[in-house]
Image 1 (cartoon, rainbow, N blue to C red):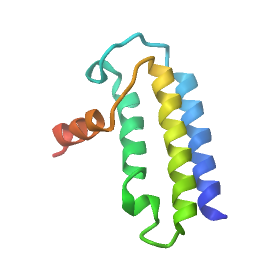
Image 2 (cartoon, rainbow, N blue to C red; image 1 turned 135 degrees about the vertical axis):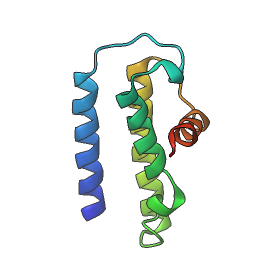
Image 3 (tube, rainbow, N blue to C red; image 1 turned 135 degrees about the horizontal axis):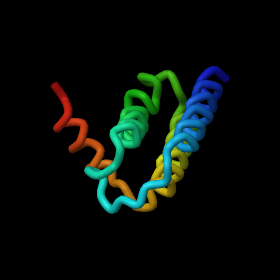
Image 4 (tube, one colour; image 1 turned 90 degrees about the vertical axis):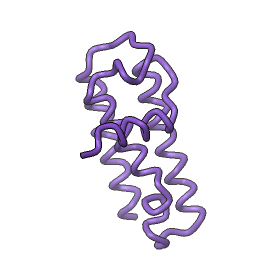
Length: 99
């Protein structure tokens, strides 16, 4: 399935990017390196209803599986930064940095 392979490629890319980053002990989203913030933003965008359902092309089961995969990636990224990041924090960052 094309959707699964693109998710797998993104997960592989994310894992490679996380290996490149040096460990950071930060306690707030604002203090994270921009690259890490952008990775959270990418996941947030992929978690939007339109992207989860591929504009209605996926079944609810497929959408749910996609969401679970994305949330696992989110958790892996949280583990990497060593603190919980909320979707609200990411959306706030997106609005602050929007042109």
